[in-house]
Amino acid sequence: MAAGSLSGMTAFITGGSMGMGFNAARLCVGDGAAVAIMGRRADALEQARDRLIAEFPDATLVTVVGDALDESAVRAGLKRAYDIQGRLDMIAATIGTAHFRPLLMHDVTTMRDDFDRNVVSAFLAIRHGAPLMHDGGAIVCVSSCAAAMPMKYLASYAAGKAGLEHFARAAALELAPAKIRVNVIRPGLTRSEATEQAYFGDDEIMRRFLACIPFGRPGESHEVAAGIRFLMGPESSFVTGQSFAVDGGMELMCQPDLSNVIEKAFGPEVLKAAQAGREPPQ
Image (cartoon, rainbow, N blue to C red; front, top):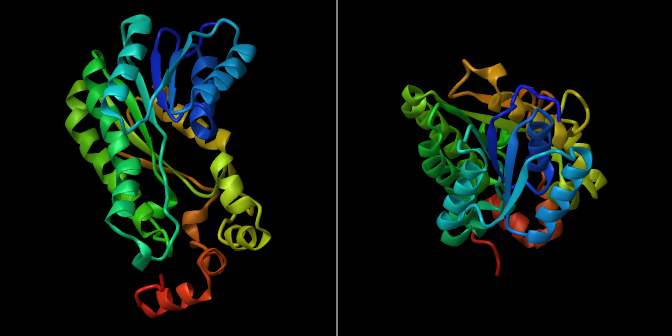
């Protein structure tokens, strides 16, 4: 492989088997970095590895099976990445989740689950990754435009992503003396394996989303990954504590009203109760 701008560097990427995590890994490998990708499914990780090795036969790429919320697994994954070349330069924490439901249908479990997936997963990567970055480094977390523009029926997700962004800014401030940069990518609606099922199969949902995007189309995972790659690399060497929107201009407009999705998923009585601020029927 020809030397690239990341030659000699090592990256650790959670959620690296698909979507923006996979595409971020692809860009890093293509620019000469050694990469460790982590995910919960061994088969998906091996498929991702096969695809990357087919494109970059000389790549240094390892897979780590584990949950980004399992502290011991995260520590082991980071150590595995570090051991490739005796250094760790870049971390991308890309996982997240969303419980799409009315606020009054949430309980403590669903609220905590969204907070854990969207904030604690990034905390673990930063907490145990930063000490392995002996000569500075770059950390990128993946947020959502919901952090800046709250969306109905995504209260826990919006709160989690907003918390993630503020956590990243605090981490950037504390880690600056160690020359570790911490930034956030903030996607809008982006095509991925998860959103294909949730949104892209419904013409009405897509019509409402696209009306809120100046570019008139959803983003693609590789476009978000390009933003991640920029913030991981030397091109952004003087950038830290920032949230970069990669959303086709969605934040310039609005979030769609997806009340029709709630009605389809939970029934008209649940939607009616949600709109009236009442306890939803069981």
